[in-house]
Image: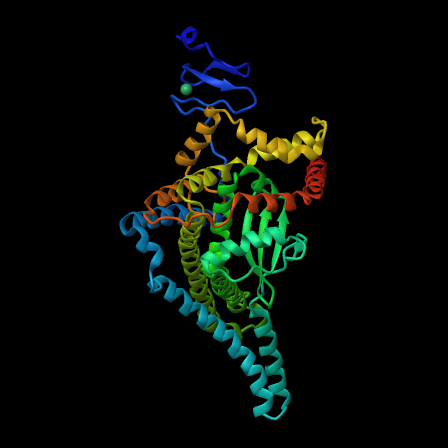
Length: 435
Ligand SMILES: [Zn+2]
Ligand SMILES: [Zn+2]
């Protein structure tokens, strides 16, 4: 059997029997071996959840990813154009508002007590107590990204591309761009002034064609246009406040033997306090569940924005390519271990690698995405659901939002940041060897 198929093989291709079912499969040197017949070797890239928290999030992404996909299949474009927020989102907002109001109330008490009780020592102690509690509970604004941030003066062409996409999607203007060394991109808001920042990973940008890149940029700017970050901030900080309430209220002990007989009297109150702290703990979980559930919808919406900018077929490929990060890691290792002559050709090598990826290997990734419901990280719906949702969109995408020439200018501009990024990547990998 193998003699008949053995023609037309390139040097790197071989037939190799599967260790599991003994049937032959094509094997490409330098890529993982897998079996088309029994799925031997098709084991995932998806990180296995370790903590209870991770397990719950993973459960939510798979379960609601699928549930929302079913909705998209039933409702088609109407899914993306709903006027009214869902009931679960209203509940989430309601609880979050109550929590934030409680924090404000504590702060209010801190001011009210000394004014009303005219600086009585007890009112001052009470005021300091409430001041401390409100400070402890206050929502923290997202921190400034660690990467160096660039303004439109530094990267005019990149900002111009983001602006064009943003205008189509009604996204507010971007303030800053962070150049990332990761195979990734993000949309973020940080600080009290709510600065809008787009994170662009040079490895990802180099792995994508122009139109695939437009999908990713459209997706990220879509997050900005839907206000996902502000909503997340409002809800997530309330979840953090709530978990602090749990800590404040939970008694250290139910029975304090140091106070002797009085412990008996204190016991029912402490028990009540303990129960209340666990009711709050329950609400923390409920809110976290509602939060991650609604962020699944955000991802589908952002994909829709990406689709509008880039069209379906490029969106599909871009989502598959999001799973190609491991090829980049290998290239970084090779450069760091001096296996390559010119380390600064790292991104060129990545482009070649992805252009020349064997069909067999592409199929392995496609199978993995379908089988493992592999998603990019645990907060996104499984990629296969996102890809199926894209197929359901029955509206035309925009034409020529950004020209190839404009993207070429952007790529040229970002090239100036490559050398520094490569140095960092290589240093980081070398350091990791000594950890
Ligand atoms: Zn097999
Ligand atoms: Zn997203």
